[in-house]
Image 1 (cartoon, rainbow, N blue to C red):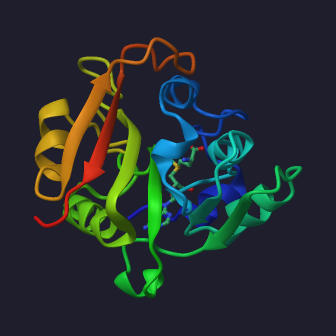
Image 2 (image 1 turned 120 degrees about the horizontal axis):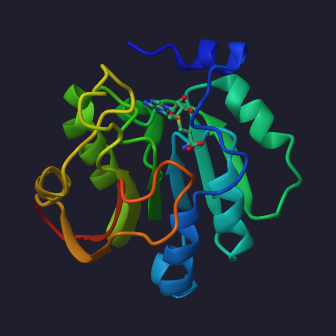
Length: 201
Ligand SMILES: C[S@@+](CC[C@H](N)C(=O)[O-])C[C@H]1O[C@@H](n2cnc3c(N)ncnc32)[C@H](O)[C@@H]1O
């Protein structure tokens, strides 16, 4: 099991690129602020919070959540956009939510970071946290490795069909595309999916 706190403490964080995920800009340019609903957007596994601040800079109220108190403390040191908050917590633990609801969810390098055995818990957490009609937007790391380079992960790759299958019990997929922008080295390895939560499974 990955010890995320230690990885931040020792600086072993190859995912940290010092800027928001390039595909998030594509999502923000396509999806009007009103489509995220009037509540907060949750960013699980927010790390140093670059995506949190990009979403907040777009006019959205955002909560960045991370297991690592070091990551959250570092996120809080960046200049605030004014609409963002951070919290230390485990979104896979149902007690974390404590009745709170969100109208949006931004996924980036969290689904691929958790143990694949916890993917059902991820989808359940998203379904529990989001209001009916809530928007789950994500860039999924489909193909993190070159052929022959497969490693134990994280990141753990996932196929588009698997992502669709995981979310299907609770979410309708409304749009999807392969992003044209990416961090160097991630070109062609990611997939954006936009999902809306159904009324009932
Ligand atoms: C690969 S890092 C990505 C961080 C950030 N999204 C980025 O791209 O810079 C995965 C992050 O998810 C966090 N994380 C993993 N499992 C989590 C959980 N169950 N609840 C909250 N955060 C979690 C880790 O602490 C880590 O910051």
